[in-house]
Amino acid sequence: MIVTRPAAQAGPWVQALQRLGLEAVALPLIDIAPPAEPGPVREAWTALPGLSLVMFVSANAVQHFFALAPAGAAWPAGVRAGCTGPGTAAALRAAGVPAAAVVQPGPGAGLDSEGLWAQLAHEPWAGRQALVVRGEDGRDWLAETLRERGAAVACLAAYRRCAPTLDEAGRAVLDRALAEPAAHLWLFSSSEAVANLVTLAAGVPWQAARALAAHPRIAQAARAAGFGAVDLLPAPTPEAVAAWAGGWASIQ
Image 1 (tube, rainbow, N blue to C red):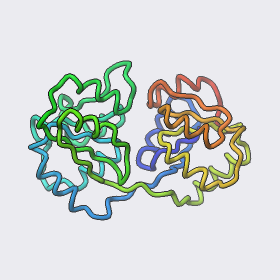
Image 2: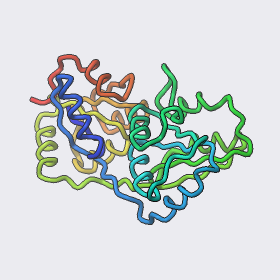
Image 3: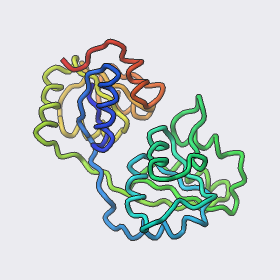
């Protein structure tokens, strides 16, 4: 199994999958870098007490936002931190956000902006302020929905996503996967990772390869790239991957 998450998340995922009995290796297909200009992130910290909600699109958003926090800064009381999945929720708690302030999709809901909105839609949003912390580009569905309900919403780029530069180990993983496509299972948590793989291996037919996707949009991207078999995970967790994979050996 090839884990394509950014390096900071790929390592822990590989370790978790190995503990669950799966053969797994990391091939980060997105590099994460700090924002080109850190000033707006620092300024956002001073405005936090006046916000009703800060939505973090990923664990990377959490890590880079908190990396630029003023010395001794604490999460302000009464401000909720929204997210769409358990990994980001765990990152928020690890960063010092009280568990009671973290809001995420409920049981059975999709792990996406729509699932988070289901937890927020019953509230009056007119006149309230919210912030979406993301990369340089991102999906604007939640911001637009909050604005339609009367909230003032800003989007903040706390990090940059870059195409990966493979080291020797990464190139070796890719070469093995290209040599035996049917023997490797790709785990995708981002459509951008799929696109970067296609760029790194231009012209490679992927019909014999199999992919697991964390969201329907990512599954669609993998199918469009030519993957012959694409499956959708019920949840983006190592446990869900292990439950799906069973005894399937992915790295020969």
